[in-house]
Structures are given as structure tokens and as C-alpha cells.
Amino acid sequence: MASADALDLARGVPIDQLPDGGLIQGKAGDEDVVLARRGEEFFAVGAFCTHYGGPLAKGLVVGDELRCPLHHACFSLRTGERLRPPAFDAIPCWRVERVGQSVFVREKLPAQIREQAFGSTKLPQPPASVLIIGGGGAGLAAADTLRREGYDGPVTIISADDFAPYDRPNLSKDYLAGTAPDDWIPLRSPDYYADRHIDLVLKSRASSVDVRQKRVQVENGKAYDFGALLLATGADPVELPIPGASGSQVYYLRTFADSRALAHKAESAEEVVIVGASFIALEAAASLRTRGIGVHVVGIEQLPLERVLGSELGRLARELHEAHGVVFHLGQTVTRVDGRKAVLSGGASLEADFLVLGLGVRPSVALAEQAGLKVDRGIVVDEYLQTSAPAIFAAGDVARYPSPFSGELIRIEHWVVAERQGQVAARNILGARERFDAVPFFWTRQYGVSIKYVGHAEKWDAVDVDGSLEARDCTVRYKLAGRTLAVATISRDLQNLQVEADMEDSLRDILGSGG
Ligand SMILES: Cc1cc2nc3c(=O)[nH]c(=O)nc-3n(C[C@H](O)[C@H](O)[C@H](O)COP(=O)(O)OP(=O)(O)OC[C@H]3O[C@@H](n4cnc5c(N)ncnc54)[C@H](O)[C@@H]3O)c2cc1C
Ligand code: FES
Image (cartoon, rainbow, N blue to C red):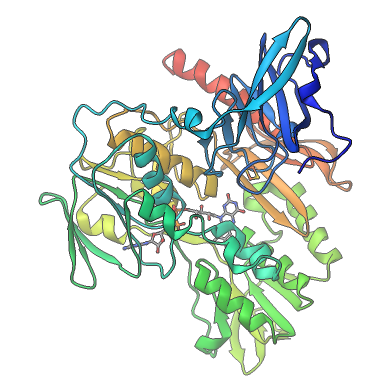
């Protein structure tokens, strides 16, 4: 419902109030609408992103797309269709009419007009069936894309998980903090799978792939034939056996079941030790502090998040957590557990109701190794996300792919990248031959402070900070030999989107020049 004093776009807006690329939020009837301009064309679409309600009027127009400032979902201004994850659903559209020097938002367009954007991939020889191993972000995005592209053969997702695909990033954030109900977590309703004839097989772990026979064996004895196969098996937490710790004292955080168990345990806990200072570890620390639990973070690193974000943001993360009462024990680890005490390598011991281990993840490559596919710290794929075997693709945390920027094989552990790879792999299964060239993007949120990161920098020789780290309003650029490889921002979402668009432009130049 639009607020009473919102600009009434149905009454017309002088075009000189809307520069090229500009966005104005207002209302049409009682709905919130964004009016956008691209050159001499005007568009009116829903004002809020269908992912987590991001304010699209604060987003970025790129060509005829509108991008969300929160997590970079992308919508068509012409049709409202969701073009890129993490959103799944379209936004509504209104007809816009120009009369003289003003534009008027008219009636809302029916949804079926928007649906006509589907079914664009031509299928010379569609596979007889598509089997997807893994019901995470990449697997669901692939199944969704197959149907959007008009593929009408059998689509099956086999997932070892107990639950249908869910919003994994939320598990360490609102859900663990106790501020998100269970029904926020599934990505799609049961009807969604039924309506699209996506066969979702849960609690089923694939144990082997017969590449020649095109058949996957599942641990429960069933076998599935496939025309094309997508491996989207994700990653598993790195485990650390801690002498003296019982099973009920040690928690990992990867699955919905993990987060539920942790949230349940947290209800009666007073002190927690978190081992590791990774993103997931720190998000868990923030969520447990929100519940009022005492949190100690023990990590071998000298600064949290330093390996990915550098010392400047690492220090900021440490200060942010300390300001919220977290106690760090860095440069050490937990050597054993003695009753309720976690004993550190430095000699101190900490009271702990339980321990959370956040030591990073390893790609789940067992199936690919068994199948004889090329594996090198991830399933090796080409620029089309195809593995070393024809008709077998890989996407998400498990895939190691050639970076279009550097040509080097990289593996990324970001939600949006996994979903975008799922999309591209699905189109390539259908014969699109589309290169995976999305600029990597991730976000983390701790105590309401969001860090957005675009690009990919494994090493750098200079870090430029623009703005104020203390005021949590800054841009941090990671450079190597003068070239910006990645940019992190706090409170500068529009700039983050702009950097992504600039990197896409520079990529077009690189690829266009044959580089
Ligand atoms: C708690 C948490 C918070 C996160 N927060 C963020 C964030 O804020 N921002 C961000 O960018 N990223 C975040 N990430 C990372 C992001 O969630 C991952 O990059 C993403 O989930 C990867 O998707 P995927 O589909 O490749 O793998 P997954 O989501 O891990 O899915 C893999 C699937 O494969 C299944 N599977 C594995 N092996 C088999 C088998 N043999 N047979 C059948 N099924 C199998 C699993 O059960 C699972 O369903 C977070 C991750 C976690 C755990
Ligand atoms: S709210 Fe728009 S992408 Fe998340």
C-alpha cells in the first residue's frame, strides 16, 4: 500500500524531472511504483524487489534492466521478469504514456503479457531428461531456468537434504537470531514444484554416476537415468575433531537442520565458543549475541575475515563484534574440551554450553571423483560450466571455472554466484553455449552492518579506502598492479551496483578484444 503523500504518478511527471537512468518512486492507485527512464523510453514497475523487498528506486538502471541495491537481483524494465537471482519472482508492470513533456503511469499490465518473455532458448536436440544432483541454490535455479526456457522433458532434483531448497544465507542471520520464522526459509512452496513438474526427491544421497550408461545410483538403491546431468552438490563444512568434546557439544552450520538444532540449543545457553573466524562463524556470533548469549571467538588467524577482506575491514569486523560484547582469542585454537570447559592452545579455558565450528568448507566432490570427472579442489568445468564429460555440467560451490577476467580457474562460495551458475548451466544443457561471465558478488550482514563485495581478489598489493570505516560508510578497493580486482562497500549500495556494471563493461572489452 502506497503512503498517502507519495507522488501520484498517474497524474503525470514532467520528463525533465527524470534524467536518463533516473528513478522516481511514487504510486499508481494504491500501489508503490517506480518510474524509470532509459533514453527517451519510460517504464513503470513495482517498487519492491521480490527477494527481500529491496527498494528498487534506490537501484540501478543498466540498459533496460533494473537492479536491486540489496543483493543485485535484476529485473526487466520492459516485462518485469526476474532476469537474475537471488529473486525468483517477477515484479508488476504498468503502461506508461508520454503526453507532450510529461509521462503518465496508466493501468497495470496483466501478468500473462510478462510471461511471454519465457521460452527463448532454441533446442536443436533437447536432452531426454535432466537430472540435478543437489537441492541448493544452484540446483533449484537450474530447474527453474529449464522450465522458464520452455524445456518440457522430465526434470528431477535429487537432494541429500531433509528439506526442499531453502534460503541458506538466512540460516546464520535472522533465523539463528530468532527473528525469522520457519516459513521464511523455503525458497519455493510445494505447489511450485508440482505446477512445474519438477520431481523433487529429498533425503536421497547419490552414491555413484555411470558416465557411459548415463545413470546415477542413489544410496537407497534407486537408480536414475539421465539425458543431461548437473552436479550441484555444494560444499561441506571443514570438520575438526576436538578431543573430549561430545557430539552434543559440537555444532556445524550448513543446513536448515543444523541451524534449527543450533537455535534450539541456544534457547537455554549462556556461553558459546565459536571456533573459526570465517563469515559464517562471525554471522553466527552476531546472531547469538542478539539472543543475549556470551560469545567467545577462537581463531588461528590474527584478524577475522582478513584473508578475504584485508586488514582494514578485518579490524572493522573485530571492533564491531567487540562493541557488541564478543571476546576474541586469535592466533590460537581449541585443543580439547573438558566437561563445560574449552581449553585453548594458549592455555586459557573458556566456559561453553556448546561450540560452533565455522572453519570454512570443502567442495563436495566425492561423486565427481568416483565418476572419473576432472577434479582439482572442485569439479573442473569450462566456461560453459561443462565438466570433462559430455552432457555433465557442474554449478555452484562445487564448480571450479575459468574466470573470464584472469583465465585462472576459480571456485566461488557465494549464494548469488551459485544461483547464476545454475541458470547458465541449465541454458547450456539446452544448447545455449552461454559463457559464465557474471561478476562475483556476495554480502554479509552482522549487527545490521552489511558489507557488499563485487569482483574477486585472491591476492592484492594495494588497498584503497575511500570514506570512513568508523562511520561505516566506505568503499574499499583491492588492487593488483594498479588494476582493481574487487570492491567492498558499506552503506554505498548504489556504488556497489555501479562497480558491478563497470566490471561487466570492462569484461565485454576484454572478451571483445579476444582477451
Ligand atoms: C549459514 C550460511 C550462510 C551463508 N551466507 C551467505 C551470504 O550471506 N552471502 C553469500 O553470498 N553466500 C552465503 N553463503 C554461501 C552460500 O549459501 C553458498 O555459496 C550456496 O549455498 C552454494 O549453493 P550450492 O547450490 O552450490 O550448494 P548448496 O547450497 O550447499 O547445496 C548443495 C546441495 O547438494 C546436496 N548434496 C550434496 N551431495 C549430494 C549427493 N551426493 N546426493 C544428493 N544430494 C547431495 C546437499 O544436500 C544440498 O542440497 C552462506 C552459507 C551458509 C552455510
Ligand atoms: S532484496 Fe533485492 S536482491 Fe535481495
